[in-house]
Image (cartoon, rainbow, N blue to C red; front, side):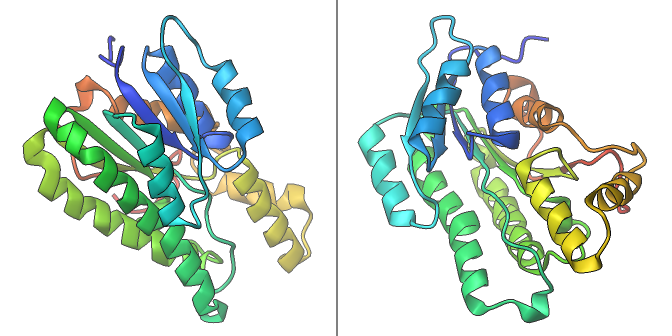
Length: 258
C-alpha cells in the first residue's frame, strides 16, 4: 500500500531512541523528509545518518522539552514547515500519586502538554495552507486504564488525551487530524526503568517482574518499538484521512476496556 508520504515533511520528537527513533526510520523509509528533535546533538546526528536517504532532506533540532521558550526559539530558527507532527516525550518518574510533589506535576505538564502546544501552534498554520496535517501524540494506555505506580504519568497523559480530542474537533475542518497512539509495555529504555523500579520496591528479581508484565497481555510478550511506530506512520498517511480524534492502543490486548 502506498501511504502517500513521499515528499511530506515530518517532525518527530524524542527521536534518538525507542518508539521515536523507530517512527523516524519508518517515515524515512516511506519517503518523508524527517526532522528529529531531542536534547543530545551527537545522538541526533547518529540517527539522522541512519535514515534512508533517496533524495530526501533529513535534519535535526536540538531542544530541551523542560523549556518551552527554548523549543519555540529553536523552531523559529529552523524555518522549516511540516505536514506531520509526532509528539513523543519520555514519561515521568513512577510512584504513587499521593506521594507526588507539586514540582513533579509541573515538570510533566510542561514537557508533555505545554511543549506539545508550542509545537502545534507553530506548525498548524502551514498545515492549514497545505490542507494536510497529521498530529500524532504517543502517550499511554493509562488514558483508558490508569496504571498502578505511575500516578503523575496517569494524570498528565489524561490531560494530553483531552487536549488532543479538543484539537481534533477544532482542526478537522482544515483536513488536519489529531490522534493518540497508546503503547503498552514496549521494549525500550523506559520499560527497563519501570521494571527496575518495580523490582527494587517488591524485592523480586527483574526477570520475574518482566515475566509478570508480559503475562498481563494476551500476546504474552513486550512490543517492539517498530510495532508501535507502524501505527504512528499509518496515522500520518493519506490513507488515514478520516481517522480523527481517537486513541489507538498498541498493547497486544492488555487494556481491558473497549
